[in-house]
Image 1 (cartoon, helix red, strand yellow):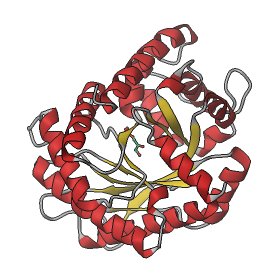
Image 2: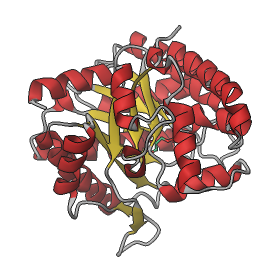
Image 3: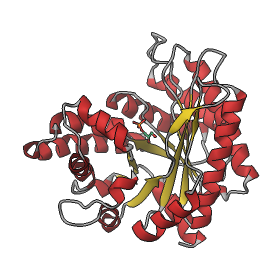
Image 4: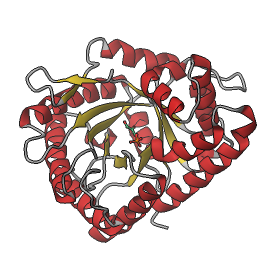
Amino acid sequence: MMLVDLLACAHSLVHPGKGILAADESTTTADKRLEQFGIKSSVEMRRKERDLFLATPDIEKYLSGVILYQETLTQKSKSGKYFPKLLWEKGIVPGIKVDEGTEPMADNPDELITNGLIGLEDRVAKYHKESHTGFAKWRAVIRIDGDRLPTAQALVENAKRLATYAKCVQETGMVPVVEPEVLLEGKHSRARARAVIETTMKAVIAALEDQSLDMSGVVVKTAMALSGNKSGRKDTPEEVAEDTVTALVNSIPKGLAGVVFLSGGQTPDQATENLRAIAHYAAKAGAPWPMTFSYARALQEEALEVWRGKEENVDAARDIYMSRLEKVFNAARGA
Ligand code: 13P
C-alpha cells in the first residue's frame, strides 16, 4: 500500500458515524470472556465467536474496520472465507493487534509496560502482505493511583514504544491505531482522569512527533474521562463529554486523522450515551478531528450473553448485536 492508500484508509476508518469493532482479544482474554458467559473455550469456539460478530449480514452499515487477533487472520468463517477476505468484501478494513501484551515495569512493578517490539517489523510486513490488513493497533496501559501513579517514567517509556511501533507500521503502509488506555480502575475523580488523559496524550504526541510520523495517517484510541470505578461517583454523559473533549483538544494536534474511543468497562448503554454527548460537545467545541467508537466489550457482551456458544442462538445474538451497533452508530453522529 502506498502512502495515498494509507491516508485513504485512515480517513475511511473514522468515516462519520461508522466505527471500529475491537475483536482482537488475545486468546487468554477471549477465553476468559467466553467462560464469563458459561461458554467452554477452544480454538473452534473462538472461531465460532468471531464468525458470530464478523459474518453478521449488513455490519458494514455501521463498521468501517475490525481489529483482529493473529489467530483470527488464518481462520475461516462458516462460508469458507478467511475472515480478513470476508471483511474486505463487505468494504470493512481488517486490522491487527500487534502488541504482545503487558508486564510489570522493572523499576516500578505497580505500572505496566507493553511488549512486542522484538520482531515487530517482520510480523507487521507479514500481516500486511499475507492477510492484507490495513491498520495495526498497539495498546499501552496507564494506571491511576491518586497522585502516585502514573509516574513520568511509565508515561515516557510507554509513549516511546507506541511511537516506535507506529513508525514501523506507517513505513509498512498501514495505519497505526495508537492506544494509550488510561484505566477506569480506582478511586480517582473524573478531574484526575481528565488530567491523566491529557498528560498521557501529550507524551504520546511528543513521541510521535520525535519519530516524524505523518500525523494525517495516525488514529489515536483513548479512554473517556470517567470517575474511577471505586470512586462511588456516577458521571453524567455531559460531564464525561466536556472533560473528555477538553483533555483531547488540549493535547492532540489538528492534523491527526481521527480519535476513537474504547469502552473500557462501561456498560453498553453508558458507552453509547457518553459517545452521543461527546459528539454533541465536540461539535460545540469545534474539535478538529473526527471521533468515533472502537469498542470491544460494549458491542459484544449483550450478544455473548444471548449466544452462550449455541448454534440455535446465533440469530437472536446477531439481532441484539445489530441493534447495539445501530445505537452506537447513531450516537457517534450525535443523532
Ligand atoms: P473495550 O472497548 O472492551 O475497552 O476494548 C477496546 C480495546 O480495543 C482495548 O484494547
